[in-house]
Length: 76
Image (cartoon, rainbow, N blue to C red; front, side, top):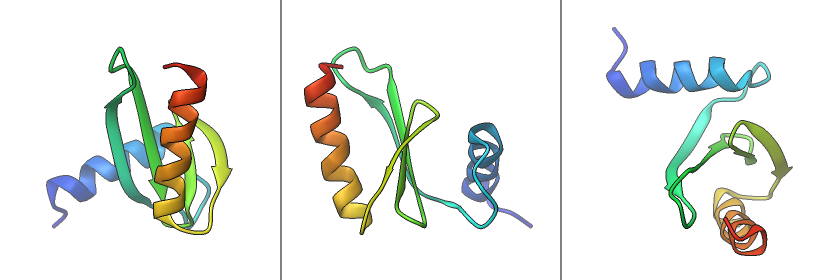
């Protein structure tokens, strides 16, 4: 039986249309000044912001840092 988190991650994976083999590693919600930005980092270190693929990184930590920089630059 799946846990709630596993079921929720499966829904996010289907919604984003992640390629086969990619799973949600970290989900970040309510980001930015208006708290209307959501981001997902997959197990292959790919960053998705509001459902759009941003880039691939070396690690989850690098992806988080790039997300902070992206929000700062885009003034979100």
